[in-house]
Length: 104
Image 1 (cartoon, rainbow, N blue to C red):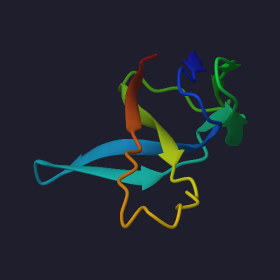
Image 2: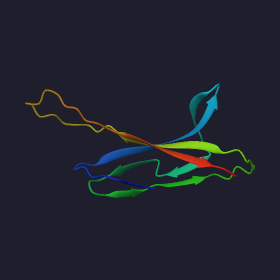
Image 3: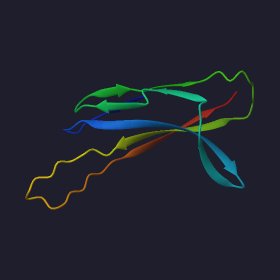
Image 4: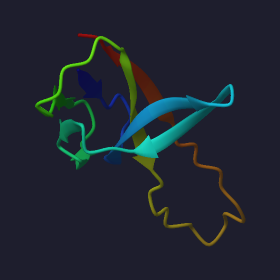
């Protein structure tokens, strides 16, 4: 998958890999090493595109049950240098959640 920065300033991102399970009908997310994703953190300059690679580790077990994962692409807040005349600022960051289902 790819991420593109259409902003005027560089942005920093972090990838978070989670396994999704259901316990008593409630959706839960837990950190996992089943998936490999790279790069884990990166800086994306204005107008640039970053390729993200995701792969399933070979766990040497066979299962017909589907496994659900999520990759979160989390934008990290940037430091903003305020001018003397500016009293406050709001800077929005986003987090994208990509579902991955693997079935054997």
